[in-house]
Image 1 (cartoon, rainbow, N blue to C red):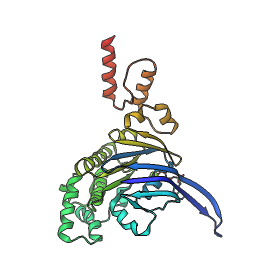
Image 2: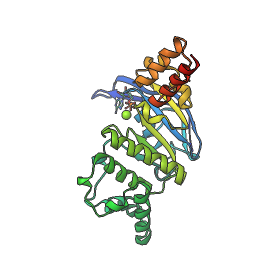
Image 3: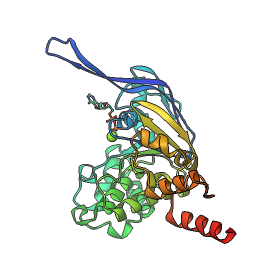
Length: 284
Ligand code: ADP
Ligand code: MG
């Protein structure tokens, strides 16, 4: 679905005469391989290059060096830009910047209408997309009155209505309360499981990536760790080094393990740790 090979992106700042003032390397030889139907999470501290990578997947930026393919299409070729944007939909941080219409169903229908989909099919897509994100009963509502999580789900429905094979969500929960965050993550998983949409979830909340198929950790423009969630979360020291907020329960489990208590690797849920400790206690 997505393949990056030694992808480099530099933001170059120039003065009025066009002389280079500064260069910041946002992507530093990134390799990435995402298969169709995978649920991928990209974790990283602010400024690690996550959004720059997302923009490359949507052909909003072009590779400085290296290459990126989306569904086999090279993003550096002009004629691929539109098909790439229809293949890989984007969801951004702030739902308020993504919702344009004053009625939910019109907002969701806007994208398909814009690319000339026939009216009957637009309504069919609107209904299906709103159903997929659990917002069908709000179709006649005003987006303004919805909660943050609901708004973000409407924004996701708008992307789903374009029938992309892949959806990139760039910190979609950053502005939401804990409930809204859960709604959005659940929705992403449902789209992945029920519709087979490839998901790239970008976040800095570790709890949100527990159910991903694979996790990539970025730091200073590089992919510094990759693996299944449990493999990643069992390396607490490294995660802290990359300035990620490791959940307390993961830190505690790590410390317990270091002092000889047998708890599994990469514990992420409190219940999991409690169970492991009780098991130990019985053995004692
Ligand atoms: P993240 O999404 O992980 O926070 P970004 O991809 O936004 O990271 O940024 C990566 C690096 O590129 C940062 O050092 C940031 O300051 C720099 N950067 C991002 N956008 C621009 C821009 N438009 N111009 C110059 N530098 C930028
Ligand atoms: Mg970002």
